[in-house]
Amino acid sequence: MFRQIIPAAVALGLVTNPAKSADLPTFAASPEAPPLVSSWSPWLVRVRALGVLPDAGARLAAAGAPIAGAGVRITESAIPELDISYFFTRNIAAELILGVTRHGIQGAGTLAGTRIGSTWILPPTLTLQYHFDGFGPLKPYIGAGVNYSIFFGERERSGFTGFRLSNSFAPALQAGFDYMLDEHWGVNVDVKKLFLDTKVKLNAGVIRGRVDIDPWIVGAGITYKF
Image (cartoon, rainbow, N blue to C red; front, side):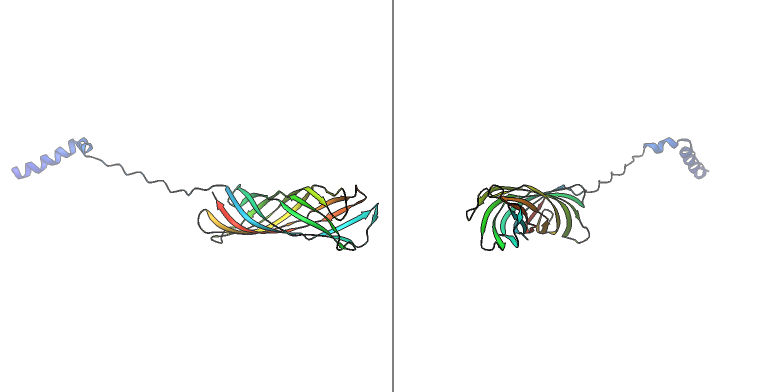
């Protein structure tokens, strides 16, 4: 009989005291670690060596009469250059290039052999770029924008006087790529075309006209992404 009473009592105790189960220790699930988010900076800088290759032409007149067959030749220039880019998104960026070039200007056509003068040019150029995805470490881009060329330090030659070139705006087109070696460092190749012309005066304005410079700007250098 005792064998029947003991199991019944145990069962009754479990039914009448369910709160006892609350005394058992419980363990909260460990919080899930937040996902790792890679840092991203909108700033990028490049240091490049540039070749500035003018594609020159001219329309000149003396005392109001066109000088038939007159043209100009503008010397090429190689310079160091700094550019700064800011990414509005991972694909859209603005780039500003900074550098100073010096060029000699000589006559061509019927003015061949005539040294006209030389000038310095400060040509800041701002472009809006689209950077393409899906090429791994290769980051190609295209861009378009505006250049403002400031001419200074003009010096005349061959007996000319009063040599002056006017500052001028010009549209700019661009294509290039960065090849990233790691998260921050890469190499860059870049080509720009400026459609730049300027007004020219010589001999107190007796000789005047327009000079097309229209340079190709070809560069290669180092990229640093912050």
